[in-house]
Amino acid sequence: MLLEVILMCAFSAGDWPQFRGPNADGHAAGPETPVEWSETKNVAWKTNIPGLGWSSPAIVDGKVFVTTAVPRGEGLSLRAMAFDAKTGQTVWDREVRAIEKAPSIHTKNSHASPTPLVRDGAVFVHFGAQGMARLAAADGDPQWTCFELDYPPLHGNGGSPVLHDGKLVVVCDGSKDPFVAAIDAKTGKVAWKTPRGVKARISHSFVTPTIAMVEGKAQVMAPGPDHFAAYDLSSGAELWRVLAPGWSVVPQPAIGHGLVFYNHDYDHPELMAVKLGGKGDVTDSHVVWRIKRGAPSTPSPLLVGDELYFISDDGIASCVNAKSGERHWMERLDGNYSASPTFANGRVLFLNETGLATWVKADKKFAVLGTNELPGRTFATPAFLEGAMYLRTDETLYKFALK
Image (cartoon, rainbow, N blue to C red; front, side, top):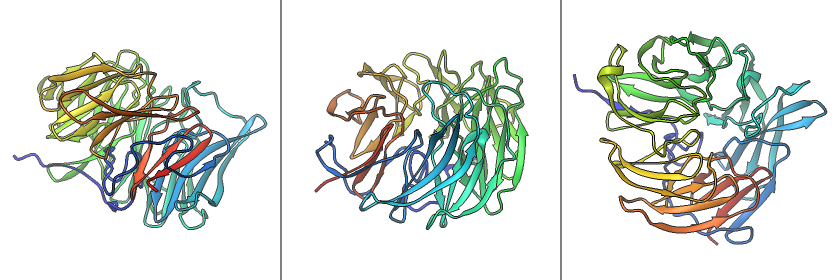
């Protein structure tokens, strides 16, 4: 049977409504954005964000949405904020939940790392084990909250939600009893909750899932501890899996050419390409290629045509043939990396953790096309829309646009 594979997206191409853009693939369409910027160059506006959050900006209907965690004594105020995309002025600032005592997190993490998701006049925000909420995009008024997906996190939250067919899918891989769940986007009720089918030695991960169509049915692509699993979106049933030891998985899978590309470990990362589909354990039949050298632990891989671009946390950038895994180049860039690479202006952008951005030619031959730098820490992936780039540091949200 012909395998039909489509990355699902019910979002407008004129928005940047979720982590890694309208198709969750890191591609920026539309007018060219600035390729040069600084604290003073091509700055349309900049505004300070209170607290700390590594969620990426989401931009819909002239508003920019982020989340943040503001310290209050020993506790936290978990907040969602909206800014006017033209002026940078605050439109609304809403507390989603107050936490009396802040849970421990990894030193590189924040308490507001998942990216907001915006759809049909609603903003969905996710704070991991601290809960989810649906807010009105216009004014931030709460429409529902969900605190049912309680689990013991390790190192904090990370994975962003994805939305398809009215279901918000989140991965809840905590320190024990990991699971994947879907929430009804209209009501906030749990639609299904599926325990992980593999008992791992270490069970926590932070992955953002991906939705794909396989043989006409929506499937959830969710790497996790010691395995990758695909789930039926409507029921939550596990459909197929690939076994590979690993834990603390972070990158969002990429889809293309009938394959899913994903990482399966943090300490000893390996990037894998697997044929979509099948039933049960497909480890021996569906793995197409595997790469360890230069594999990412945190940044998501970026598929552009037949080439897959990725960067390791310590700055080894690579380009390989997506179908075969044949490496075209592997080069070191300065710094360490957490943000995912993006494709904009026909170039690949790599952003390190200290504000250095490097434009690389999207080609089988390696070429640096320019660099830019900002002060501050930069763990959040940039967003692009209508000729502008929105970049978040640990303190500031910037909009860069051509004058």
